[in-house]
Length: 265
Image 1 (cartoon, rainbow, N blue to C red):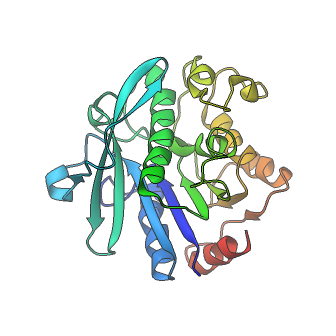
Image 2: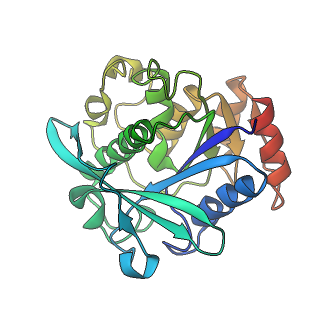
């Protein structure tokens, strides 16, 4: 039986502009689906996305959850669309305060740092809560982009007893730094949820930046993929020193390498 792969993407072409991250956000799920794997794909519903042109539709049965972030309730809205050329279905995590009001992905937007960490937390928890409602059990969760960096932590702590994720392996892809900012000092407090306690983050800097987020993801992942040729050497060394299965950058023709990595994880 083919494995089920959940892709958590920060950006996907054609819904945002071309970049290494958005292109891989499209290409990896597409090629893995073509290989016969069963997949689900998620990304944020950035305000720059034209819902009519992209043919996004609200999914009422999956929406209606409220997530508490930093002691405030935020409604979770789910939308869905299909990339016509590839037949890949994409679920969008939406919320007016965190996504729809923001025109572009955090790689390029001028944003208040206080929102960045909360947005990543909302996105991570929104994806996982939606997958639970789908009653779908992924064998592997593959995170592409720093927006999903807290997902590995949550899978190994807050969601570890959930039937949907009890046996799930987590893979994190490493890319070049697209954050260029530091998160607010309350990030550790905001992350807290169930067994994901702030004290688990004591080893990291008080102020999280791109590298700290990636280190967090590496520490709680089961496998690491170097997804871009120019990933920072410090992060690559950190991943290698973790002793976890690690796929070096396979070049442009990555599909067989990724497939083997999934199968052997």
